[in-house]
Length: 287
Image 1 (cartoon, rainbow, N blue to C red):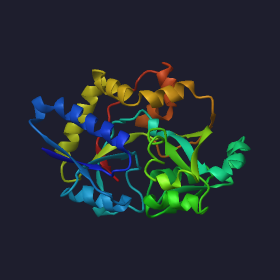
Image 2 (image 1 turned 180 degrees about the vertical axis):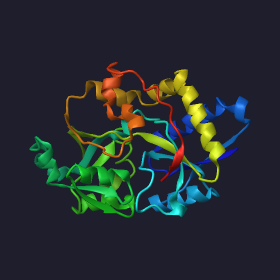
Image 3 (image 1 turned 90 degrees about the vertical axis):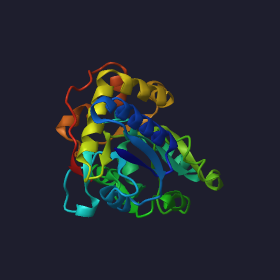
């Protein structure tokens, strides 16, 4: 089996972890499924272009992304894929810091409740599942086709803030040093919503999806997934344990019942507030 993993080149910490987790899962299934090849392909694709490429499977045939509903009115055959329903991030992607303009710091310091934040415009990329989550919760969203232009839109005052994953806060401004004097991460507000992340595989390779699901479940059962996760994101987990900032919690109506574990805040899991779910993930056709 030849797995060609898509790396979009903008979130190195996430991609390093996801690639390492793929390796772990495939190593655990060599006895039952045979040898494999795993390569990392760095390409800049829009969301819709990525789904078409995954569907074709010629350049890339596996990627990781937020869980999405199985079928929507927007689904098209060239954008469908197989969904491996085993969460790989324990909801860490759902914790967001806010990237703002430095000139607006005092404005954001006056925010005390979610309704204050809802008066402002959040910037997102078109096609991201986050867009519908924010809108469902009453937030004003400006979603654009090209995520690479979000920082420029913020600097030009076309949006008011960009939610940034805790995993990406150390690299977001490093990618655009010329904007570092204009933009900053707000230190005392965090947005949280349940956002399980899973792997997607080309629709033409169901045995690859089956193998990946089997390997991930083995890694969950023997604790190796947990160890890789904690070693990869020790800094982010420490921020959650020690954070004293204001947190605004949003609901995610799209999370399925079989992923109910992912609805609970990660800091509760870190504190031992609930046991790991015993539900087995199932790969399904999705987006």
